[in-house]
Image 1 (cartoon, rainbow, N blue to C red):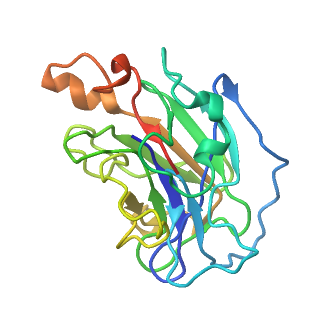
Image 2 (spheres, one colour; image 1 turned 30 degrees about the vertical axis):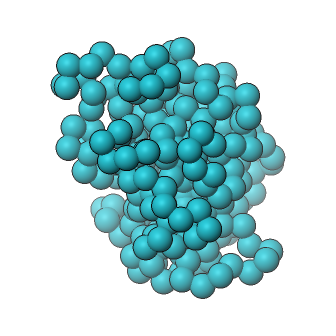
Length: 231
């Protein structure tokens, strides 16, 4: 399963991210965030912001850089296509990179980052083929890449996790009503900043499947795939 991020002006938006196996990655030089938030649509595959209006051609709603990637043991699906496979809009199905059991990825957005607005601010896309095939991931956000605000995720009940809702309409990745994926609202985080540039996703699939008597974190990929980030 895979995820995506995006942000929107009047109810959400998003941006996309990307990663490569073997630890820290940097696709380009980081830009310093501005001090004044300016809302605009952004999207991340596996992480995304949703916008009510179409973004200008110069604006990229997806994640721009994979800052760090620490895959779980024996996980390699999609790693040879990093970082591009997790940057840009969701591709659905097998267009993903697996985090592996307990794996983690951090992505960064260019200006304006993800800005708090009405409704969903971030969409995460994972290839959950059905609600009966969850690969839950915990989503966190940060304004500096060091201090994190965590969206509470219960991997047993699946409440608050990414990797639960299948991707729906690929042609509308920034519309939370049509795109599918799992949406997140910055306003639900206590004391969180109204503008963030970093998104972190941690696989928590094993915590879901083990209570069901299955010693794996993914029903496929020999049990080692875990959360599959799409956008």
